[in-house]
Image 1: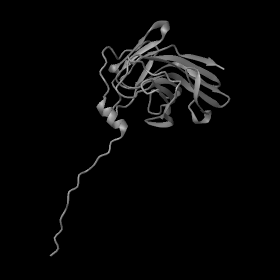
Image 2: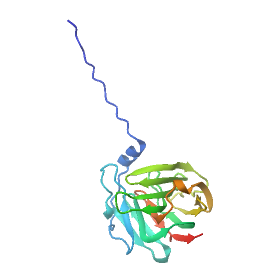
Image 3: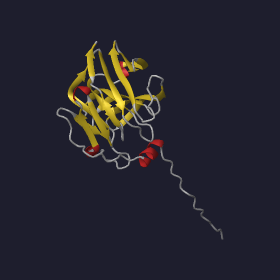
Length: 223
């Protein structure tokens, strides 16, 4: 008679860095959120932990008059006005100020080429900096998926946060002659063929989760 023995082996689950980060630093609750300045629209990302859209009640987004806007967030979100559109040859620029650091790298910046932003077919390209790490990234959102154009990359043009977590960075994009240039503080950090970037549509801001950022006026100029 043949005896068969079974050995139970431990199951190892490998979690991605993004998943571990989300678990260690969940979206915070922000008091006073949920109502936004007239004309502005806000859409939160889907929360990795819950699989549901982030809570708009934890997005505090206020008008600072001629000085721009200010947002303190739990969930990552985009902010836009339907009238802020760009096509052809144009330049977009704003100055963004991080007010305090988070425990790990998070980014904020601007997006272009926004379409169907209020529904499941949303598309846009976004350009972010992280003063914590001194890096930038460019990505394309299509529906619920995100494609990396250029991953987080070190660049000396990105002003790093000071000891209090504060940093000012000017971000701009120039679309001209079938090319897109991405600039930080007036210096080009990346360029690409416009055919591979969403360049025609709504322009706005993007701020990732658990950040406190002053958003300077958004300048959109024809070239």
